Length: 244
Image (spheres, rainbow, N blue to C red):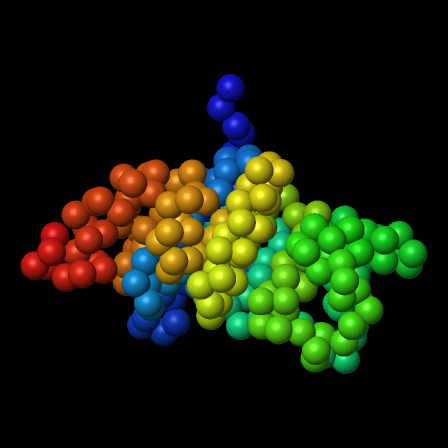
């Protein structure tokens, strides 16, 4: 049985003056699917994530979550509707402990828990990402990958319908990278619906059901990782005309 569409992006554009950062891009994401958004630097991938999460409003086009129009709404409304995210540059709350950082996701996210219930839920998410030993630690004591785990746990604490991972694997050493891929794979196995922006092609191949490839703000290919990465337009965008 085909999974139903959870997120529907319809001809979405974002212009900054004369720069068309995203130009009439359309795709949909099905329930329990992992969708990759890939492309060279400057292709509009993070702008698309910002449009979905509400950090930016589209110049034109519509985005629907479970058939509810979310484009143009405030980021906090979209979070409460069921979109959680991590960022290219890790964003933790430095004055709070590890568990308090994750509790913020439970309080302000889709699930919206409070007090003792929020703490218990946050502790479960920290166990889920492998940080149960650091519940009460200050975030200033964490390694880079553990800061990323905290941010992921905070996103999961909101119980999102769709989880956006923006280069979550970036900056990790080879050992951390394999740990990170395994963790994201476990989210997929749990049935999470995930959109991930990533440059690590091994991760794209092992994690994604489908990929959207962007270049200069437009979608140039869509399909399974194998289909997308073998498309002549994609090879040209990454390697130049002589390799297409």
